[in-house]
Amino acid sequence: MFHAIYFYVYPSVGTFMSDSIILEYPNGISKKSIIKGMYKKLLYRYNDMQLEPENIRIIAIVDDFYSQDEAEAYLIKYPIKQTRMSFSVQWHFTKVCNQRCVQCYLGSEQFHGMLDENELSEQELYEVVDKFYSFCNMIQASPVFVLTGGHPLLSPKLKKILSYIDNQYRKKGWLANIFILGNPQYLEENIDMLEAHNVDSYQISIDGTEKMHDEWRGKGSFSASMRALDLLKKSTISPKIMSTLSKKNAEDVINLYKLLCEKGAPFFAYSRLVPNCSEKSANYFDEHFTGREYRDFLEKMFNVILKMREQGYTTQFVYKDHLWKPFLAEKGIWNFDERYGNDRNTMLIYDGCHINQDSLCIGTNGNVYACMKTESYLGNIREQSFEEIYTCSRAEYFRNYEKYEGCNVCGYKQYCRGCHAVSYGVYGDFYKPDPQCWFAERLFKQNEEGEA
Ligand SMILES: C[S@@+](CC[C@H](N)C(=O)[O-])C[C@H]1O[C@@H](n2cnc3c(N)ncnc32)[C@H](O)[C@@H]1O
Ligand code: SF4
Ligand code: SF4
Image 1 (cartoon, helix red, strand yellow):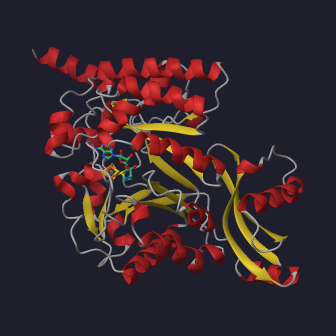
Image 2 (spheres, protein in one colour; image 1 turned 90 degrees about the vertical axis):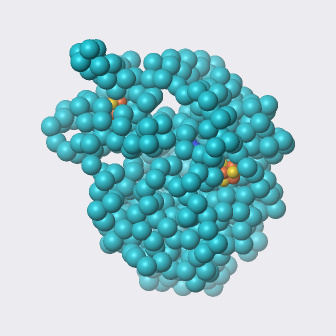
Image 3 (cartoon, rainbow, N blue to C red; image 1 turned 180 degrees about the vertical axis):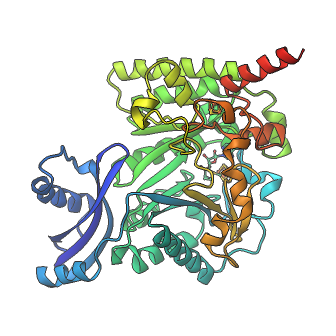
């Protein structure tokens, strides 16, 4: 039989291209074999790039054409609709979870509304997908679905959402990336289903080495995460490992990174703790990094990254926290002017926190937030469109960078802006400076000294 395949190739980190191909193979062969077959053909097509099978990601396969001509006619009828820009929606479609992690923001007061019983019905889930595609089509962006919870694998809704996106859109050339943020448990019994739906990546949170991780997430969670990592590495779904970093587990996160290098995890990143959680966690996280202390941590982490690289480990450390940028710039490793042009006078935002730029978040009941980690309710997708929500006056609040204290007078404003969800968590004020930014800390110390 002939099969029409839509796919992405990733010639280098951060860049991708979409394409399609027709392949003849018998039904029932593994996805890895399909990719092998594609690879052989694509080597000719992309002879100017160093293509590896790992750089090919299948987005959708339309099966069972009797001839090449029939498959070609299909691809002409449904050409690829895809643009360079992307827009992501982090969709907490289920609140069901098998863990009770100490840091979890879903236990915080601001999301009690989201975790109510008034969950979106099956039909409403599909409407969310339709509305999101319609919005992305309007702004000429490729949709990115970040499906999460809770634990997505515990909800039958996951399969429904994936099937709908596949059948209504991805198999008709409207490509989209699908990332899942989930827990390690029950992956084994679901991995075939996730592969069949061409899920791009599956993120597991690991918050330290075994003792610390299990203290945060429950006994046995660490070993389950290691098993899940091994399973994903053997599959066509890219494993992503994410830690939540606080002063409490900082040393442990460094040790975890070393361990993951040894285990051959392809990606590792961390996000800073946003202290916005339950009362229980407020007591547990009794101390937070100061700016100076956080910079010392970055220095230590960076030296370990260099050392592991020198030793030949290939785990890619993802510099996710925006405060890496000023750190690397201070060291002369990252030159913004070379990268983006010396254009400090414009209002253009090149990088840094994405809040309300190219992403939105949805809760189980359709509530839409600018960011899941801070109080940022914007509207409800049941009653409104993404366009309305994205452009409402409350949404503008998060894009008003002139009000971001510290950042508004900082040379890194266009590329960083730290994390003001942390500001909100610590001070109850989103516009206050990021408490872990050493630049802002210095600036405000100088001001205080000036006033004294
Ligand atoms: C809410 S969870 C949902 C997915 C899945 N249950 C998990 O734990 O990875 C998504 C991510 O948010 C992180 N997270 C939860 N509460 C946080 C907080 N207060 N500050 C920073 N990250 C947090 C989790 O550790 C996890 O990496
Ligand atoms: S597993 Fe994820 S969603 Fe569940 S409690 Fe932990 S952080 Fe929250
Ligand atoms: S003041 Fe803001 S933009 Fe400047 S380094 Fe700190 S967080 Fe980044």
